[in-house]
Length: 246
Image (cartoon, rainbow, N blue to C red; front, side, top):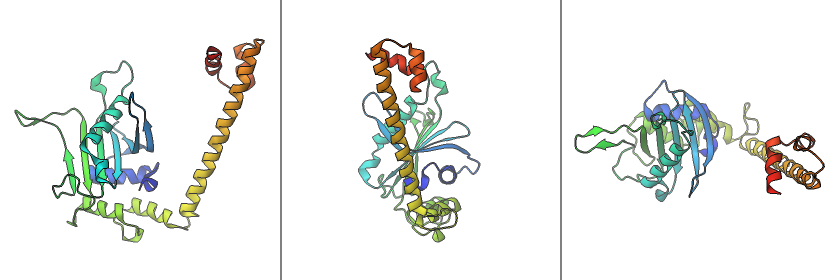
């Protein structure tokens, strides 16, 4: 499923429209395996998305029950919040955020297909709206004919022809094998990823070589920082930082 959703706005948009019951929701950005660095433990999000209203979404696909602990949802929310505000921004500008766990089993044990969790003020039973929302999707739920169950079905279906939602079905069909649009299907996808990885490694090696050459020039003390930046292709700021380390 991570493969199906990778950088795929239409599929994520289709899922979120069903989960949130918002047919007009428009997704603007999708990233998979998004890494967030914290002061202690860091985090890798399965799917991170933003919509046209600036709302953030984190979709986590968990096969093991321990991977969907309620406090993990809290941690995910906190990490996203930390990375959502720039210095000087007001707390009131913190965007609305949804953390959505899609689980193989009914980890909350109440027999529902979907659990939507909000905060409430106990004394008056009024909602406490801090913009945070947690949702659990139970993939072991029985067929009740609802849209959410149809989504649960599609998330576990290996045959695109049997799926309810067209965007997910199209993407699954692509990864099944040869087809007119996808060419080599899954093999073509991984070949493309391998080529990108090779190019990234080559670029990294070139940068390392340029930095080593820049260090030698700095040690010689015969060239200006601007000349070294021009000769190596590095930014002046990077050359300045290299000079500071020597």
